[in-house]
Length: 82
Image 1: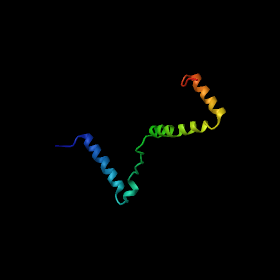
Image 2: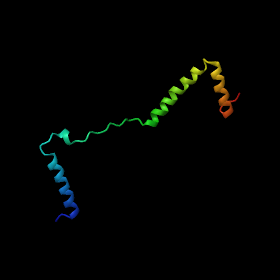
Image 3: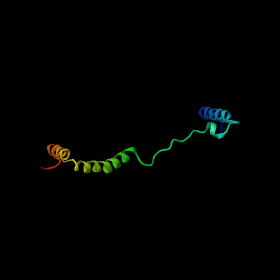
Image 4: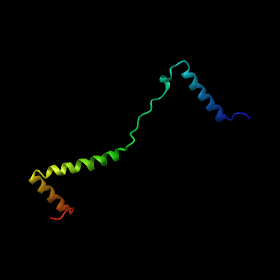
């Protein structure tokens, strides 16, 4: 069965790539894979928010003026009752 024009173009393109690589070390033509984190940025951000935010709020309790301001702000928004 003869080659179709699309197959012939694909074969020629592949042959040109093979010719370019001839005699060169593998590292010269291999693309380096970018490493991806198994955890997404959203998950990392959520984890930081869940861990860091309570620590920050806990530190506010040591400064009564700031803590009262924070509670009043939350009361105005309607998240806590005063």
